Amino acid sequence: MKHSIYKIFKNLNLLLLISLILTLISSLFVIEQYFSYVKTDKLNTQKLIFRSLIKEQKESNVLDRLQFNAKSAQLTNDTQQLIEMNQYNYLSKIIVENEENYSNDLNNLSSLTSKYIKLSQNYFDLEPNDKNIALTLDEIIILHVEIIQSIDKILLLNISYNTQRFNIFFKLFATLLILLVIINIMQRGKLKTIYNDLMLLTSTDLNKNTPIYSQEVDAIALRMNRKARISDNPAMLDKVTEINNNKGMAQTYLQKKGGKDNNLVTVTILEIDNFSKSKRTFSQEFTQEILKKVAYTISLHETAIDIIARSDYNQFTLIFSRPSKEQLFKDIDLVRQSISELKLSSPENEKINITVTGGFIIKPNNAPLEDYIRQSKELLKNTKHLGLNKIFQTKDLPK
Image (cartoon, rainbow, N blue to C red):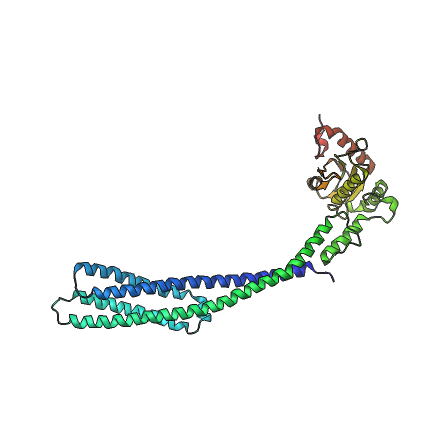
């Protein structure tokens, strides 16, 4: 059974989306947990401030009043920050039980703090001999006890909510971890299969008997096999590369000639720079391997109305049709570049860099093909001294 690449990537995309959502939710839990620690620290700080303030109620001097004003401002500011931070606990409001009690307790603490500060300010304004000073101090002590109890209650609630959040976060994290493991196990094998299929497309050994596991690559391979065998007549095919020979090129040109009327046509001769008839650098087996790889690389750039052929020992003829000259030259040069990127090793394990040089000629419609093949060969011959691994045009000829 062949796999569908579309379905594999669709499922992978869905699983990655779910993982992303769970990761974002986990991040929100972490942020809320951090704010929870900040709130705990502020509440403990408030307890210390309130306890220190009780000691400063005994005498009403300038120093005590200044210290009180500074500490009361901090108490008011911290309480307001606690209320504001609690407004952004979106997840806690959804998942934590009785979370409203926490908000009510914070508001109550804010009210008690304001009352305590106001009562203390009145205390500092009383004269030492005022008969109400003892009564006011008793009220402050009672209110102080109530505030400490309120803070302790909020701290206990905070610990309870932290425990609930942690339990939920632990389950969420465990789910995310399991999901990622499942994705890794399920998808790695399929992705490796897709990778092997894609690498198979770049191989010169592709044939009908090669096992392919993905539907899309199977369809591409079928089209490539069909394209590599335009003619069923062995006399029309080059025996080494299995693309057109000169006879096959002429026959195929007649069949496809009508499809080029609205486009420009180029006749380009590509010659392998590494060897020639007079300079047989490599063994016959390695030379044939090079020819196969070059032919296959060229075929990857061939469209339905293009024609490619091995027309000489180390030469290939490309008849490409495109809407503009710029596109023609760009595609031909891309073929040259693709060939230069081939990775080959000689029988002696020496790295070989294969390059081709080309003669690029624009052929007018209805003009004889043979004339422009000859012109392309002449152009290639007259520009060889200008360099290798290039595509030359008529304008490149020395004046």
